[in-house]
Amino acid sequence: MTSNQRGSAAVQGVWIIAGIGVIIAAFMVIRSTGQPKPVAFTTPYQAVLLTSGAAYFGKLEGYGTSRPVLTEVYYIVSQTNPETKQTTNVLVKRGKELHEPDRMYLNPNQILCVEPVGPNSKVAQLIAQQQGH
Image (cartoon, rainbow, N blue to C red; front, side):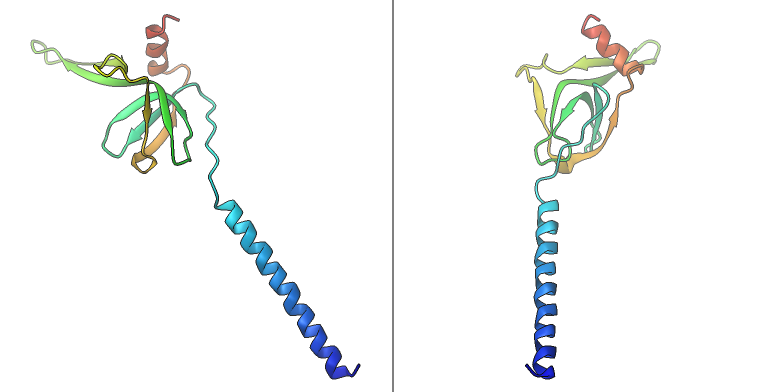
């Protein structure tokens, strides 16, 4: 084998190794951009703010995927006393509506942010009161 042939074989070997490296890198990129894993929360309830301005509180599952679901859903209703003009906020559990929903399937593109509801927060206390704890 001449030195020219050895040099040509070495170049071919480098190209083969580089090609294998590119294939492995492409496989890793495709695998990492596959189905995202849902986010795990450390608190029982989460506050979900939608792009519409609506805010809901509940147990969020599947956040970070294409099908997030909120269960045990609560929302706040503001009520104004016509005599004193004082506004009070009341936490209302969803499910009392005519269609009695037990969950909300959310459009992930409409979720503006998600925050944990602290276990000692006013919202957590009101939820516990409504559940009879």
